[in-house]
Length: 426
Ligand code: PMT
Image 1 (cartoon, helix red, strand yellow):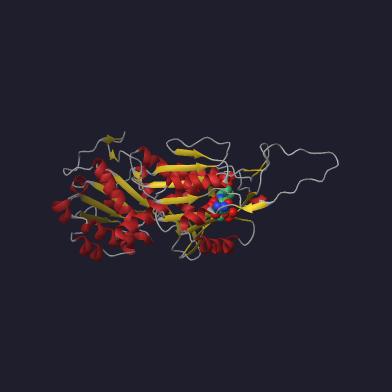
Image 2 (cartoon, rainbow, N blue to C red):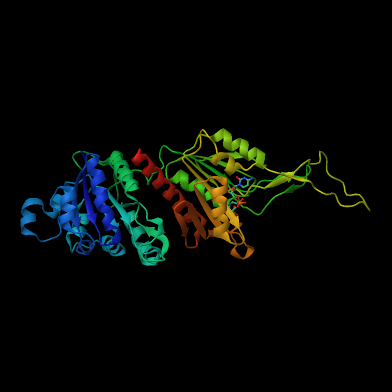
């Protein structure tokens, strides 16, 4: 049995803590809760106390509690301290080392690993002050989970700022505990400069999973010296492979010809044509998640010249007969056996981006489509940034413009959460 101290911050995501407590207790953990004043505006100590089956601590100077479980004891008797939702204000106070309420006093006094699950408006999350506080806290040994991209509580708002989902949180809490937690509470391996134990690994929600990614263009030969290609640089697909690796997955990247380096720690299969890409993808199965970011040529030349097609003075230019390439994404998504649990396609569109992506999702039988506008003015092909729309069976999320690495990170975290949810419901 592990002892989880849950510090509940004041945000709308606080309601998820009730389910989190229930799930942790179902798994045999003891959960003790501290609530900030603001948290009590969203959920009541009564509800939290009933679900955790323990007294909820709310006041720094509570004589009763000081006799029973003072803040030092609360801090000491935890195998892990989880801050959820970690609001912008709470993160700022943690980064500054404040101790003027029970939550911050406990966070300052504990030597157990701290896992923070931020939740806030996307503008607050991307603000320079929050970024600074997060960097400071990471340097102090605090581990973060999320926030995820998605819809906000505010109507019409979407972006990176949603608190990680409960199954994701449970999985991460258990992995931090498995990494360093001990029954006695202080047997952790890694101690940061602040003296606080931290998880020995970065967040690895995809540990034990196999992620297959396609990236880059394909080259379809016309003859031995010429080919049909497109403008894909491989930056988006390679970023996805890298994000999956950082999140702990074993990654196979099937890449068309690109000028960028192979990501570290990833098994890269280099191919040229769509047919070779399909073959390499089939060979890499089974996979838990497959993400198809490659810009595969829809057509190839029916009969490429065996030798260089010669230009003859006065002769008409040659005409090329094209035949359709296999649809790699559609083939994998419609497999009867060894279909990955989550199949994600991209849609590169120049008009009616979301509408076309919705049609593609259904036609190809995929779970999610990441739609992006590849009009020249958007600079997506070859650029470092992307603005995508995530199209799922549940609806469409418009994500703000982000670096391709941030898109990759948000997408893979989202995928990890879904897999964790699926595992939970089995
Ligand atoms: O590489 P970058 O410069 O970073 O640019 C990124 C990107 C624009 C290439 C990327 O974000 C992207 O949109 N990739 C998909 C490009 C594409 O081929 O889109 P599509 O709408 O034509 O195809 C839809 C989906 O089917 C894609 O997942 C594609 O990989 C897949 N497909 C298409 C044709 C085919 N024969 N086989 C396939 O698997």
